[in-house]
Image (tube, rainbow, N blue to C red; front, side, top):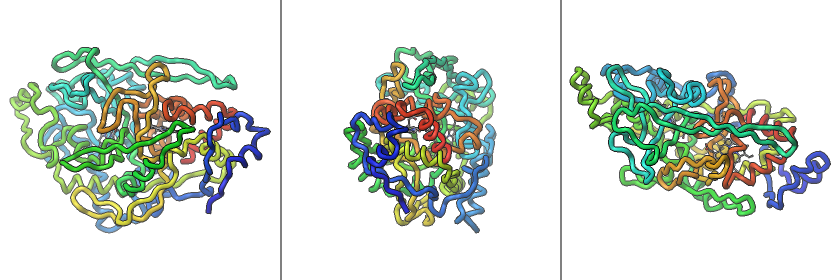
Length: 478
Ligand code: HEC
Ligand code: HEC
């Protein structure tokens, strides 16, 4: 059941109290559909958990052989890799994380080193990916796509990230202050040729929460393409577009990753690029060709055997795609309900699309196993999985990272799915948001929205304080 609110109704009901919220700068407020209070986030995959394992528990339909494989996948996912060969080995020689779970703790977003260590830290582990390119977009020969800031004993990390924060104070029209923090990156301790900052773009990424990976993989891609054709709201300055990527000779719609730069779950890439764990898709060490690796071989380490089998990678794939999606909480709390209305009023839902569908047959894992349970589901990811220009103005740079991924330009980002976001603090112990974790709370995350998000952000900005607070409360219920 749905409650249909007509935009006019807001003004009739709320104008006395919500004067500024009605002042929408002449924006065409659409026919707004607020989903009726209690909604299952992901159909039959919804789990009713709000504890620290809310992201990391199997969907209700996982049983029998699938449960066995889920448990094995979970173990492989969290196994702390070592530098030896064989099961649990294969780490490095250079790496960014020592298990999937080291960065995606509890299938979420590990507290990133950008804040706790101002970067890689001296000995610490940063739980981030550091992408580097030349200014013309080319990769550096001695480094490749990711700067690995960790290495096994006897090998040098490729470099270390240092973050200097710049802070700026702002005020809402009602006088309430807020602050934004902008990270300035420097890379030190290059293992080989020092790269001049004049020819370096550096994009730092904090991990994405795994909430709803199976549903994302099962999305009806034609629905996303139809959405792209439809996602055009000139009054709001919004027009989302698809990212298409070519992998192994096939062009596909990208749906995962911060720039929708991946069509699949990238399990093989995660093992290879993030941890140095070789596999059938990426049989070569990521640092192949680095001079220090030849030295490594001389130290008696052997790099010529694959570190994980395709069967085991499929178990990791199965584990991620079979995770349950936490149900929303406090949906009947009046403040949450009001915040939900504000979410629609500010046009957040034009990008953070509330409802999508999965294709009839569900998902196919990387070695061919089918997960039909993921099929034909109505889901509430709060994302359109499209790219949006998020602007380059705020604090002189905005969210632009100058990093190109497929069709996505530096200022373009995939709308982050918001399902489960309210539990991030419980699951991972922090509230750092946005692709590089620069936002320290919900308000800062919203206030970084520029470009296509500018009009929406401004509606939020002009809301009375208690409406902004209600909107945040609504986000916490997701
Ligand atoms: C060094 C930290 C690190 C390690 C280790 C790591 N990841 Fe990630 N992962 C990330 C970051 C950062 C992103 C976001 C990348 C981006 O900007 O798109 C990500 C994104 C992903 C995504 C896309 C999620 C989405 O919602 O679109 C998947 C799936 C994923 N990782 C799976 C894995 C698996 C499986 C492993 C282990 C084989 C792994 N990761 C290991 C940091 C890590
Ligand atoms: C034009 C499309 C668009 C609109 C409108 C929009 N967003 Fe976003 N939102 C995005 C994109 C794209 C990102 C990812 C940006 C990044 O990571 O740099 C994002 C990120 C976020 C995040 C951080 C998610 C995370 O896990 O890091 C939150 C919270 C959020 N948006 C809330 C809102 C709210 C609330 C509104 C309405 C006031 C809104 N957004 C309006 C596109 C949009």
